[in-house]
Image 1 (cartoon, helix red, strand yellow):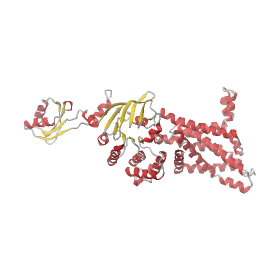
Image 2: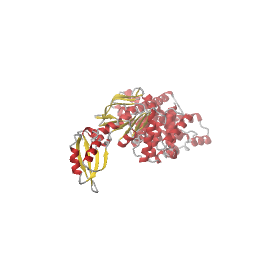
Image 3: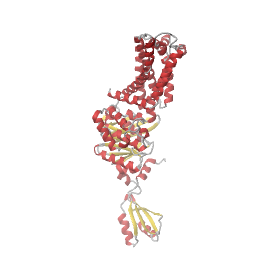
Image 4: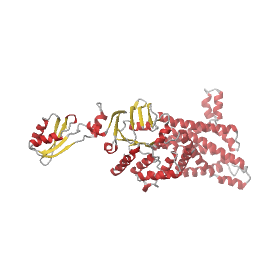
Length: 244
Length: 313
């Protein structure tokens, strides 16, 4: 656990010593606000809740989170520090976990900084704060899933741009796997149960529940499995590189 | 303490390292030489667990690098090629990170960082971001990181690359000091380094070991080993070289250009025979005055070239 904590601390510090952290936070806050007010009709709805705020989060995460995850491994490869890291007496999984947690905590900080929305609705009306808390957790969980995917993409290359594009593309597939655009690619050849399975991967469907504050077991299990599988894939990618 | 057994690495069809075996004991500094791309770094990467061997194995203090990589990594201090480090951290922050990753904490960590910083003379830059430091300092940060946990085995990939002569001297001194109770492997392509720090030399070329010997033994293989360099009056140079050729221990006499009315002769011996005394007696008997006489030790770079270029090059 000491090793994971050490990795988390280093990675978090690395975010905040570069402008990336501040650029990310500012853009995230600005866009989250703009979407909620202009597209979501935050005020016009006349309801004291944050659904119009949360509902756009997956779309924001789609291009912001891969930007957070892209440096996790690609940068180590580019600068050669991966050689140093992998010859320290730590297991690959501990490092994978540490890097994931650091990026996840970082997006958590950005998300927490949207608290003025929460204060605003509480000032304007009497929202159900339990629902809002659940929606925050759901939003953070989606960010975690995207980070886990982005970290895998980052481990595949030493080029951060490739890591970003690849990560965003895979996240998009998971986000949209419920819509015809994606399902059509499977319908032609795959049996129905595969199509249904792919459709059930759809993060957007799960998220729409979460945004309403509904946390059901299927969603929790699905997200936990997705993240867990990504950790294993990430570990595998890094370890296979050794045997190449 | 360190043993490499038939270590082999292939990248597709490329045989990067082929059948490399050697061992290093406590108190020994092994110079690992070879031209660029000969497989030095790949060999070191296999030893330190960064790259898995295609076949063969390596062990450190009895622990196998493939089966127990963690125990091997705990016992090695490794300076990778190019001394990579996190540019956004300060040397102190970086050493703290590496120390904690190695399970050292609290006061003990502070003490060890102090020792490492002092030994690598990093005090003046200890709090500056590494990316703002000169190449020499960065290399020393890498060294400090490698010696932080006082490991029994040190693996240093080109520790003096990019350093100025003073810094090179300091690093070599450090390596010598630490060699007392450690097994050290130093890769380099700088031959002067071998004389300065190494007890033994392993030379590899195209992935294979072509020599494993003490530096003096390698010098002895040089065609110039025990060659005699003579400076004498130009008028009598021809006579002298005729006379010297009659000795049966002499293989060849070369006349080199001299200036200011003197000539220089280079006398090459048969099988490295010692002929300084013989030559001087001979010329003395003929009344030829010798201005200067020097016996060559032999040049490592000649041996290195002969060994690493092979017949095909």
